[in-house]
Length: 110
Ligand code: 5GP
Image 1: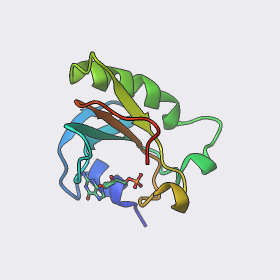
Image 2: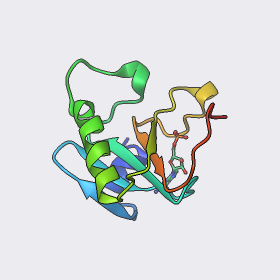
Image 3: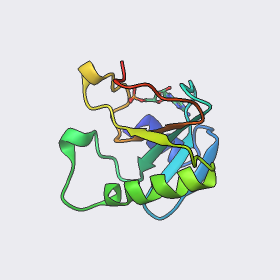
Image 4: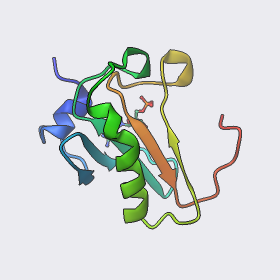
């Protein structure tokens, strides 16, 4: 069965898509934690960081993040987060990176 994010990628569920290329699709998080909160999702259904294949769409994730950060003019800084597993708060079993920006981001994260 397709993941929630595959359904968004296939336009079966609406989302505010802000970027896409042959490898990834990026859209606004439904529950934003910062003025800019974008989810960057490889088209390939990889359950999470712990299941990463050697090759695939995820290899393009960082380059997409850089382009999206430029698109949103996050010149003062931004953060890229991947939650892996229950204790890290992963809720959707389809690999995705959170791109957060538009406010000061404290460290360490919660
Ligand atoms: P995780 O907790 O797995 O790292 O991140 C999943 C993210 O997906 C959460 O930040 C959550 O707000 C977001 N999310 C969950 N369902 C939807 C949805 O239907 N549409 C969008 N755009 N984001 C969603």
